[in-house]
Length: 198
Image (cartoon, rainbow, N blue to C red; front, side, top):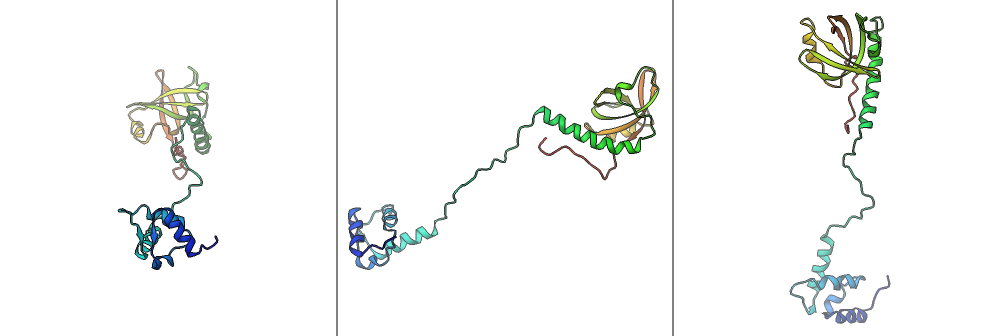
């Protein structure tokens, strides 16, 4: 920016209705238009501009916070979750925990739920807990679902079960109902919770 001579500065001030005093001329920076613009905001508006006016305008300008330029806008709102996303997440979680339970249940007559027939008397399954009552749970695997009941000996295990848990169950058929004889949980050091945005 080319520096203006004093005569040009005086002319600019006069053009906007100000008369600048001689002692104030030396304080006016190169950006004269900004100074004049800020002088117009002074109430009551002065006619003769002294060095005190220029100093005040310069101090006010230096104390104003610098405006930040927004280059990018980030949206941290929670993304919408579709049913498909939820089902996919449950499926991934089921598979991971199932792989841990398989090691514990390798010799327990493990079957998928759709392989349980009216003639099946003892079996083991791995399922996701969908419902829970005071004496039973409804579990499902990719092939179907089954109600599992708890007798007096195993009912205390119900307090350890939550909805969406993946559990293994060794079962026995008694009077058309499937009763849990033993429950299997994944190694407690391996926990696969649902993602936080679900």
